[in-house]
Length: 490
Image 1: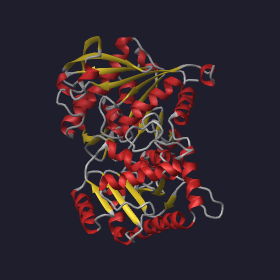
Image 2: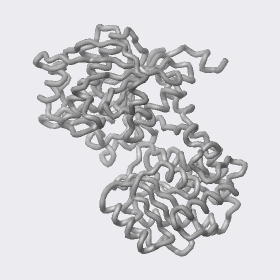
Image 3: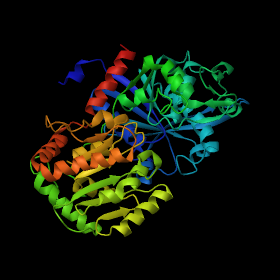
Image 4: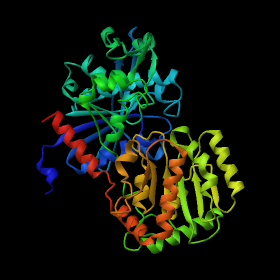
């Protein structure tokens, strides 16, 4: 019997807008998949509630079981809507899909704010109504990002006094940049929430807007975000996206819990996308073979003695690519190769194409997203560059460590929490870091990494093995969430 089995069992309903493998556009989809599974292994009873989008692959749709349907009042003028519940059970987790053709029949999960605001007003209320309908009252309702942020607001107003009203709520911020802001009359119409929730302490923002995330933060019992450093950063004007004062006011219920990665998917010992599989016992030899295979695959000069830097990223300002652009020519010294994978802003796509032309054989820019190639880069590169302007958690540095690839990161958000800078005097640490958002500091961090790699390979190799030994799984994070749920419902 594990320690988890001796502690009180908790029931948790996850409510969010996406979840791998049904629908995924970013890191939220990974968390909604991996965290419930990890919690179910720690003696939690978990249900995940999602919209039933048309784009969910048929292989999952055809296995869904009809659980029931009802009509739900939604709008200020009394308009009501059909709510269907379709269920899919997989690996200890129950997935309930809210079915409504009008809101979720368009295909993609997100289209534009005009359509998304009504869609997620409906989804937040329907998720709570579905819990009451199924007579499944969780101890805790765990909501994710602005798309589910109205859940705590509905719960404390319209659902107070119903069975589900006894639940406690946690709201997790995955990226504060997206908040669900629209004019008050529209959100009043689509929710029929009482006038008092549209005051300056809750939903109101500025003179005429309502901010769904802001309202959720006000009404939730606890707020989490995906790293301790990011929890502090978002209380400052630079990172706070106009909500820093609101978050400082609620700082007593705010904490950061860093994400993990799915170590079943990201496992170099079983990864069939690699040229050669490896573990901590043979990484030094086999990583070299993966490097040679990567060079061959991408048309780079085949040389075991060059330093290969990987960059797997969305190509946007947030990811610090203006810094990379500023110094990349000075990184190309005849002993360095750079491999880029990602899509995004046209200016960065074009600049990396230019660098590939200018440094043919030493730079390869893959302007695409290719899952197999991402695995090859994690296994074949010596270092992974993550110079982000801000990074709530970041998963690429965790995957890199799992594959024995040394992260070079800026000290922000989850990057600061998970990468301990290398100390040449004590020979500890698991990566290279720089603090201020400055191109020269990025270049300095790259040069420090290269110096260790070329002049003290023994210490470099020790760090590779240290990184592979680091626990980057979801188990620790899930245990912290479980403690949070127990604190809310002792």
